[in-house]
Amino acid sequence: MLAYRIPLLVLCCIIAVPVQAQRTAKPVLHGRHWVAITGKPLGATAGAMMFARGGNAVDAACAMLGATSTMWDVLSWGGETQALIYDPNQKKVLGINALGVAPTGGTTEFFKDQELNYPPEYGPLAAVTPGTPGGLMVMLAEYGTLSLKDVLEPSIQMAEGYPIERSAARSIESHAERIAEWPYSESVFLPNREDENRAPREGQIFVQSDLAETLRKLVQAESTALEAGKSRKEAIYAAYDRFYRGDIAEELVRGTQEQGGLITMEDLDRWQVYIEEPVVTDYKGIQVYKLTSWVQGPVMLQALNMLENVDLQGMGYNSTRYIHLLYQVMNMVFADRDFYYGDPYFPPAEPMEGLLSKDYAKARLETINWEANDPKAKPGDPYPFQGEENPYLHYLEEWSADTEDGYGSNVSYESDFYAGTTSIQAADAEGWVVSITPSGGWIPAVIAGESGIGLSQRMQSFVLDPAENPYNLPEPGKRPRATLTPGMALKDGLPYLSFAVQGGDSQDQNLLQFFLNIVEFDMNVQEAVEAANINSFQMRGSFGEHEIRSGRLLLHNGVPDWVRRELRDMNYALTFSSRTSGPITAIEFDRKHGTMWGGASDHGDDYGIAW
Image (tube, rainbow, N blue to C red; front, side, top):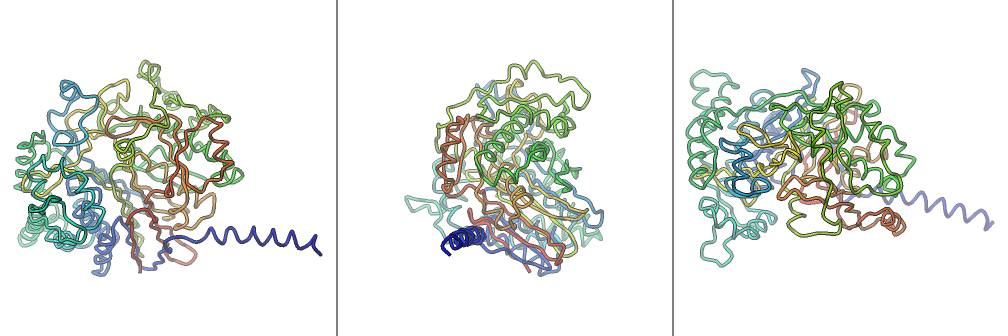
């Protein structure tokens, strides 16, 4: 009997393991009518308020965008907005490009004359033009149903005073010395003038009276236009004009230039939101959508094109071989990002056709060293895969993979790598789906005069050396190549997944693994957002001094000793953390039952509400 009992005991243990693994720190959100998820509980509440008023997912997403910007949830009103929207009427995915641009005078020569390696990380010269107000108003006008007054009501109430959360209060405290350099920022962020620690305390009512007045002016512009007989859409665009061409713009420009910034009235007037076609690839019958080369989104599509040629399930989730493959693939596609991505509205034209070619993916996959990490992974040459010659081979041949030692680490590097952003997910029973990764204007931000608008620091994502990236050099009106990267996937022509994450250069690394967790390893959406991921640091950072850490690999604390040994033998510099999933937010669509499953990871304050 003993011989039969031992296999039975082993079988019970095997069965028990996945049951244990199913447990998550947060429950799945189940909704039949709508789902609203974002980086803060109060932000999710703002989205729920719009649904309660009869709004659609676009209305809810816009309210969440405004609320989180008001809360400085690692962004502000002067930041940038990147979105994917599924329009059930057109039955297609649309891209929203509301990234700010380099201002007049913001040229390569200007920053080189100041003996800088990159545009500054902080301060008025780090600022691009505000994009989030325009992005919000264009999305609302074109695809929403509620008024701007309805959608901005939560933001106005919060600007008039809300109990500040711990993360924002601590961020203000840690940056108090720098904030004090800018008078308008100092007056907003450091209200406790009689205390040695002038930053607000957790739970203290945080007041932004100038911002509240600016938002009320937008509502006033809408109301005046409606009273004059304008349509709902025309009235929202009247508010848009007041922000970018009227008295709000004048104060923003005055306050920026007073503090040494470059933004002009002409810069704001010429800037525009683009409604554009996203890029897409097919992964085993699933159409995955990303914004194009002005952000890093296409790297996930490039990676999927490579990985579809490999038996990932056979390797096993987070096995040594699986981790090694992901790391090598990510390094190659991020090297392509670092050299080839830039603003597609400015020449030279990025070789996106070649980069997303399935044949290019196979050719890159064949170069993987399966025995050891390649610390000198370089960009490939996608031009032959779109029938052209590469005009920058001379730069490519000189392209350096020289890096810092993988074990090198400092607080500044870590914060730069994971800098910025929140994420927003919204969906409704009518079929509207919205995925947004807004960012910019995080603490410490320069507030532009009495507008209350904190300016984005995105200029730092440009490079100044064409040998590093000839597509991403600053010039007035041009968008820097940003990290922000919402995602969406369709299956059988209908929404299947909507997903986004904050975290700078780690974003598409985490989203790639989230997607594979669901598609290849049969996790539900909450399991997938909480699952242990890996992070590579072997790409050029998009912030600060754009550093690299060759061979550095972040693993979860629970990775077994034998996997650690095998990876070290393959020339990896290992670091560990209890949280490696990133603060992912996502919605999965259950077509069998006609419901929506929402997920918000256990990293940070990300929160969702469903009905």
